[in-house]
Image (cartoon, rainbow over all chains, first blue to last red; front, side):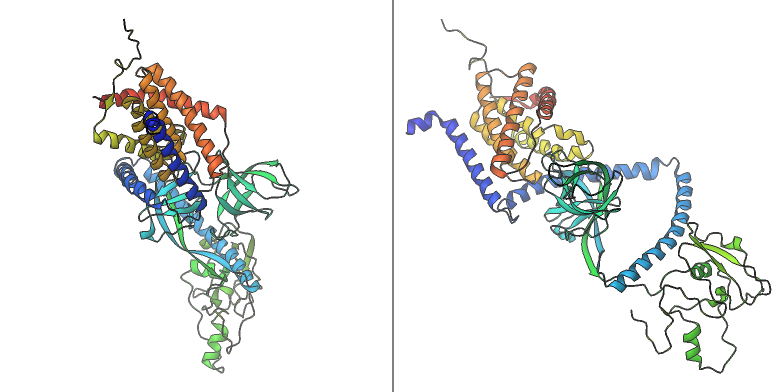
Length: 407
Length: 173
């Protein structure tokens, strides 16, 4: 026997090493609950390799910043001008979107919906990948010391990236959404069909579990549905590129992710989510008069009422406060005149929202020349009454002085 | 009269490497494998740790050393890749053993032989890996001959140049 082992020493050692590895593999597969026995060897490997990767990435960024920040400044002036113009445009767009969002929140609040909010994120840099086609993952330079935990969602400004698979002290491994073992709850934006987003062995992303009789078209946007309890609802995922009949009852929907998963550099890890019912902000929806008053700083506040018979407090509450408690600007609605006696021409409010839907006509009630000021806002607003504080038809009626606005 | 063939033990040289090279080269290969595809995703087609295993195994011509080197590099590759430790480990162990056993019997120092050896062992590596992944771990991997042969070809071409570079670190025993 001894002679046999000596003669076939190499083969015996090979068999022993293979057997040990197969045994170790079997143990890991059995304990696939991730509190794995192989954690130590991973920590060793990661702690040996990632400092090198961090150093290379740091050096690369240093050189890049030096070049782009101090040397290669061609076209920066023009870019600056373009960006300023873009900011102006976006500010106007923001006003419009705020109105829509506020309206949505108000309706959700009425219906008692709860919504998940991203309340804290940690920015991280991608320092490496798995280097394998079988497992699509990347390493980021933030770990448990930075508040990263397992199963946290990872996103970019473009869309969803993946989730945290493993966490080490100063590094984490992120499983990308195009890995075949990943799964993300998703919804088609237009048709509101829900499915599960999965990766394929070749690194594509497909939407599964959508019935074959449903209508999904190329170009439809796909968002997170929030059903996986990892990604908050409504994050952009990608766009449908191809829809074919699957093998079974389901459609085979191919998705092109918005984020370029093979060129990731900076990502955001969502470290804290908050679930709460959407609250309507104190300011309430931005209305045409609010926009106008902000853009006309010379318009004075309303003088105190001339009839002093009413108690002052009651008068204030009745006339100078909106239902949300915000000081009203009735002068724009037409209850007072400007000192000059003429309203500001429409040209002066030219920076009012351009993405207008419904024009709001404001008639100064007490001016000698009732020239209307027309601004464009998206939210249809009722024509203001000349003598009463403005009311939005969608807002609740103005509270009496004894009422308190719930926050 | 004894006939000395080209592949006789007398003509085959056994090499060894300094400790920095023996540790540094696999480490650089692992870092490069994890790092380079960040910028150039198509580089995942290359398997640098595998090439390093082949190089050391063939140069040392010691099956035990070959299989241990393969097992260690494979385990590190698994650890970095995030998969079960042992999947690449088993495949690299087989490759390390096979390449070093072949190195004992044949001269694989010239470019043509290196190309063929790498081509052959890359396919062997992938077959073992897929067998382990499907049979032991239960992963659903798709085997594509086109992709595997393309990868084998790319790795074999790279091996010719990489091995010529690494030859500078060899020391005769």
